[in-house]
Image (tube, one colour):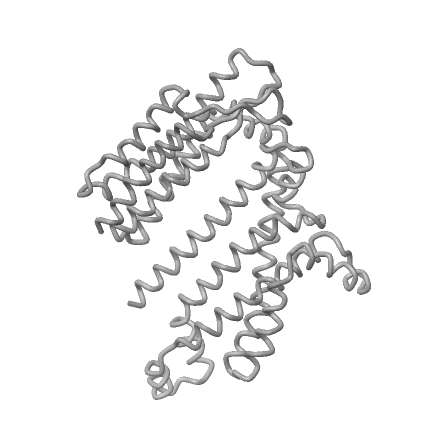
Length: 369
C-alpha cells in the first residue's frame, strides 16, 4: 500500500518537472507553422492552481494521499483546461488574427499524469465500480462545463472545430456507424465460429490459424487487398463496404478466442447440476454457460470495440469517412490541430468504450462472487 501511495507522490513530482521543462502551449503566426513554446509556469492564475495541485500530490502525507488525490487529481485536470484557455486568451490580446495558440506536449503529459494519479488512488482505495463511474462522470461533467462556458474558445483546436462543425458531427456519426457495423458483423460470424470451435476442439487449429494470419496483415494492406475481389464481385473497392469487411475480419480473432476461453472456463459442477435438473442442452447453454462466461465475453468485447474505434480511423484512407478524415487532412496540410480534431475524439471514444465495458465486467464479476 505504501508503495502505491509513493507512486502518487512521484507522479506529482513528475508533473512539476514537466511544467517547467515541456511546452504547455505553442504560439504560431498561423495554423500551418510550428509554434514557439509556452510553459505552464508562464501562465496566469489557473496555471498557478495547476502547479499547486501537482505540488500537493508531491508533498501530501502518505496516510491521506490516496483519499486526498480523489479530490486533487480531478481539480488538476479541470485547472489544466482553464489554464490552457486563459493562456490562449492572454497571448491573443495583442496578436494578429491569423495567430494560433495550440496545445503543447506538456498539456497532454500533465493530463496523463493527473489521470494516472487518480487511477492509482482509486486502485489503492479499492474503489467499487459505482465510485469509479461517478469519478469519471464528474470529470467529464467538468470538462463539458468548461467547454460550454467558452473558456477554450481562443485555442486553435476550437477554431478548427468552429470551421468544421458540421463535418465533425457527420464524421462522428460515420465513425460510430463503422464501429456498430463491425460489432454486428463480428457477432454474426464470430459467434458461430466460436461455438463451433468450442464444441469441436479439432476445428480450433485451422480456425485460429486463419484468423491469426488475418490479424498479422497490416490494416492498409488489407484494405488494398480487398479492392480486387470486391470489384470483381461488382462492389465498390472503396468506401464503407470494404472498410467494414476489413474491420470485421480483424474483430473475428478476439471474438472467437474470447468466446472459446469463456465457455471452456465454466466449471463442471453447475453444468452437472443443470443437467440433473432436467434442463435441455440449449437451456444449459443459455442459462449456465453464457452467464458464467460473461466476464470473458465482455473482455473480448472490450478488445473488439477499442480495436474497431482505432482501425476505423485508418479506414478513412479508402473513403470510409469518419474521424480519420480529419487526421489525414491535417497530415496533408501540416495542420496539427486538424489532426487533433480527429485523433482526440477517437481516443475519447476508445477510452469511454473501454471504461464502460470494464465497469460492466467488474459489476458482473462482483455479482457472480
